[in-house]
Amino acid sequence: MSGEFRQIQRRFAAHLRNPDGAPAPAGIEPRRLAIYRELIYNNVESFLANGFPVLRAISPDDHWHGMVGDFLRVHRCESPYFLDIGREFLAYLDGERGDVAADPPFLRELAHYEWVELELDIASAEVAEPGEFDPLTTRLRLSPLARNLVYRYPVHRIGPAYQPPSAPPTPTCLLVHRDRSDRVRFMEVNAPTARLVELLDGGERSGGQALAALAAELGEPPGASLATFGTTLLADLVARAILLPA
Image 1 (cartoon, helix red, strand yellow):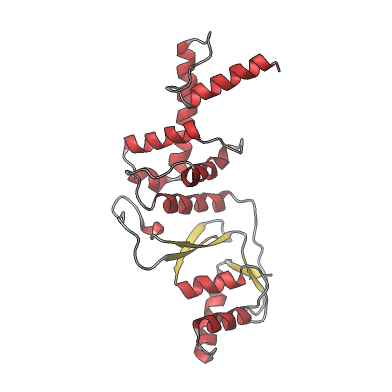
Image 2 (image 1 turned 180 degrees about the horizontal axis):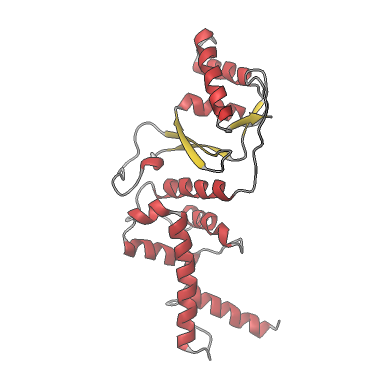
């Protein structure tokens, strides 16, 4: 491939991404250019709208299309795969979007939450039935199809009818996971439960050891009530395929 042809390709791609800021290569019929511009924009916009449906639903049309256009103009995608556009959009929001007055304060957290749902839905990992075991004495780990997430905003409740103007005083802890029937689900949990899962994430502790560590952090002696509650909680998280034997 000649250097001249590469230059034409780069100018062509730059124009498709930023029609107003990058002139098209000479000699290409305007009608053809318009078709290419429309195809590029519509494909990317459609994928983002489907991958971030709540964000799309709460965004006025002009704001949404302005954001998609800015993403195309300024972000250099690292992956050639269409399914990675959502992750690239997150990278744009985190590193290049900057502070835009019209953006909701929960924009990045909501986009991350919606991306996690997509990420788990298309993940190739599988979780087998673990068989019988005692969660208290068995080392446990977080499933590769589960995410232990903490957000400032209640992202799972945001929609056209609820858009908090500021973060509540208490963070939102969510366990998002794909179950054995391949459905993506979420659980809202309290901070101690999120911390318990975090303690088990590396697969180095048994359920009982993690409960003892949690009790020490909370300044509570590990009594019968904690053991009863913890045993029930661990059994539930194992049944949901959130925690697995390590």
